[in-house]
Length: 183
Image 1 (cartoon, helix red, strand yellow):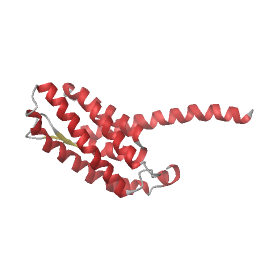
Image 2 (cartoon, helix red, strand yellow; image 1 turned 60 degrees about the vertical axis):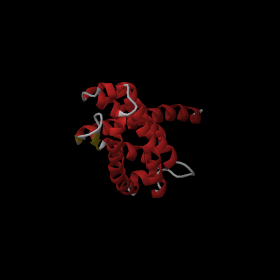
Image 3 (cartoon, helix red, strand yellow; image 1 turned 30 degrees about the horizontal axis):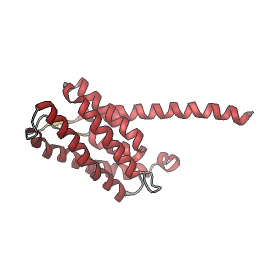
Image 4 (cartoon, one colour; image 1 turned 60 degrees about the horizontal axis):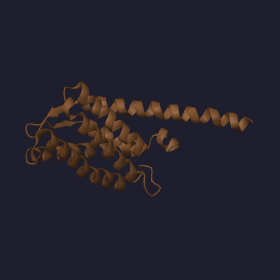
């Protein structure tokens, strides 16, 4: 009887904890996107911001589900409240896919975001997907398959900057007691 009671209390607590962590991660992605965002002088509205690095950090440290949700919610919310509403659907799709891809690869083969080479590979593999979704979204919005090409360099820069920041941060965080104990 006690083990049944114990299980009934453990399951909701785990779901609640996951919900809280995911919400915090989405908020961190949102804040990182708002904190520094530099409008690029070329393309169709590209920004360089810290949200990409936070998305990569989240996906590497917490896996594909939390990475996808945090990226989609955090950056989608930024578009909604930051005056980029037209971009929100494209952002939500592209960042959910990017977070899922990074997390899935970083957490593959028994790893849990603890292999630096795999983490870098995961981020690099996710970049063309993110860029392609934004390209298609822009092509639909602007009714042109040519105009979105101007945004590709900015998307590449944004992802490379995110990767350069995310990998060292993940290395440091993986050494903390929380990640040593829980992951």
